[in-house]
Amino acid sequence: MGWQVTSYIYGGHQLAPATQEDYRRVATALDDAGGKLIAHGIAWRQAAMDLARDRTSVPLCPVLSGNITVPIATPSSNTITSCIAASPTSTMALAGASSMGGTGVGVAPAVAHGTLPYERLISLCTENARYCDADGSKLRSMADLLVRAHSLYSEADWRARQAFNETGQAVTKAAPGWVSLGMFGLILGGLGASWINDGKPKPSAASWVTAPFQEAYLSGIGSLIAGSSLIEGLFSTDEVNQSAGKISKYSAPAKDLAQGNTLTVRRVRSTVDMVGPSTSVAESLEHLRRLGEDKYKLGSGLQYATIAVQRYEREDGTNAWLVTIPGTDGHADSPFGWEQNIELMSDDAEQRKQADSARMVVEAMRKAGIQPDDSVALIGHSQGGIVAAQIAADRADEFNIRHVVTAGSPVANHPIPEKTWVTSIEMNDELVAALDGAQNPQTEHWLTVRGTVTPSAPQMVEDGVIIPSPNPYAAAQVPNASEGQELSHWLRYHQAAYQNASDLGSPAVAKHEQHFAGVIDGNLRETLYYEGRMTR
Image (cartoon, rainbow, N blue to C red; front, side, top):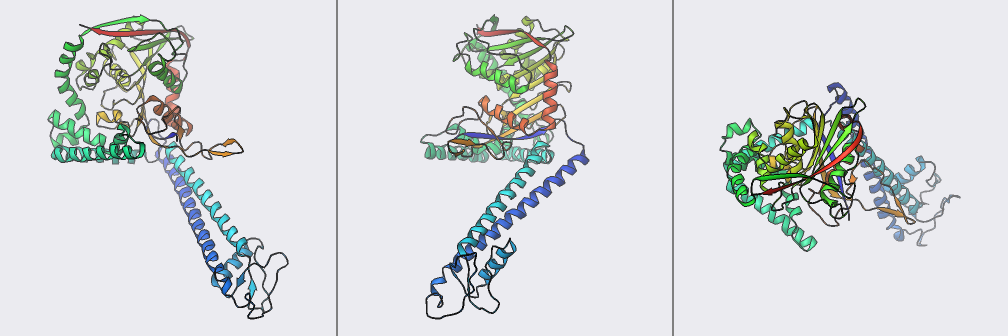
């Protein structure tokens, strides 16, 4: 069994209200027509069942049993198979079959007894049911694709989710013990279910079962730690960031004692072309995955806490830059450790700047020679995405950050300036992206792709050849996914989510793709790798 991702798009460039309304009407008409066809399919299937029931009464017919002799009208084109003895269902089916092109049996008006090809009629009814089901499903699928491609109900969905989060935050703040107990029960239920199904407890199952409540719960816990009131919570979304600011006042010094606070950034070289030239978000995501996951497997010679800084030369001789930033690695001397996430999530800009991972990336950008007027795009996974958002938010006076791409990063409350475009990719059940306790802003310059993971449909094979899916746009397959359920925070899930969003032909996605490509438009001249280490 594989896994697939279905994506929904929020924010970005939206159609005019009147145009959206036209698309909604078309989507509604398609959905209604599909529903009617499916209803007709149910009716045809019921007719087949009724005919099958009538056929069971044939052995009781006195004519066919030889007790009574009655003239029978025998059609020349059909085989006499069963008895029609004034059965309303049989009579209706006969009339219906006749209206479908002469497949019914002609019966002489003067004869009260005749024969009927039940097998043929049942087959026709079943076939029509199948056609109605298939065509109805296709129409409804087209309606769903239209809704997702043009984000027709994204604003309503966003507002409903925001209201749910605010309500959940208030409930959590009012009764934290009971709510935490409920969340703990869901976690145990998810672990227990995975234990039964897969033979061992899986954190991915616990994350999946708690996914609808994660943002609301974390927002409520953040509000408690931050000390904000219920009224304040209704008009703000950064409670988690406020609490991170308070916690990092203690966690940062403790981290410095254990790890040290002296950062060393040095240029290193790769024996493998880990991060190649890029012209799209999809290509850059693949390079990010390679740098984060494949550097050891491919024998590149690169170690943990390594980022890539690429220089593109434009036609006019100016430079553009793409910085690729992997996520948390957790090594004892790495600037991309666990505690740094807390500092990066702080609501205080100075605390965010002091996070080791942010300091390392900024130092690498300086060493590479990025100038204040050079166009820069940043792409990061998990903590790498938070670093990218932090630099865009807090280093706007030093760098010209034009576009940020984040994958699985909780960055909703980072004050990224309007001039910077943001493309965020998040999975509904990955937990990490929900750690900010809020939804991303819905603006033209901030696009969010949210993916939902489901098991892949079984592949259809005929004569040894795999038959393509009838609707390739419904979902994107996750490459190299585990057979069993796993955490969707792996970058390959975000890649599948973005692939599905791109396949839909969304104008919002296309607009962001165009902007990202424009930022790094030029010829790749060099790829520089930088490694960071922490010492006392």
